[in-house]
Length: 156
Ligand SMILES: Cc1cc2nc3c(=O)[nH]c(=O)nc-3n(C[C@H](O)[C@H](O)[C@H](O)COP(=O)(O)O)c2cc1C
Image (cartoon, rainbow, N blue to C red; front, side, top):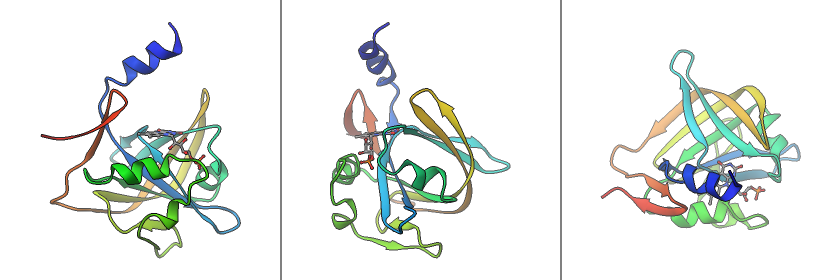
């Protein structure tokens, strides 16, 4: 099995898209596009995200205590692309604010989960970050942005 067929096969699993945000040790807002997100447990309420070892500010997500997960709406493909671009002025390109914990919170999204880091474990070339959900919000009318076979899609 080569890595391209591995990617191609996993790409058949349609997902939503999230932007995960946190604060770096020196106070900068950081964020990245993540589709490796899933629910884990209802009681306690746990979710997980898988973050690549090469992520610029990995410690900000794994070691700073808290992070936000934003599920994207179907009109936010540009936001997904922006937060997947290393070195981009990510927070200059979206409307956002600091929430009560000082975490970057995108003003527009489909749903938002504020998480406390519960556990971090190795998963090959990624870190599996399990978060306990402490606060949440969702928009009842918005529709999700979908990722399938390496392309963006919407629900018809
Ligand atoms: C649709 C999409 C989904 C992605 N999902 C993940 C993911 O689940 N985990 C991950 O580590 N990177 C993922 N990425 C790549 C990161 O968003 C990208 O490498 C980002 O630039 C990393 O943050 P950095 O710029 O701060 O290093 C995804 C990119 C796209 C376009």
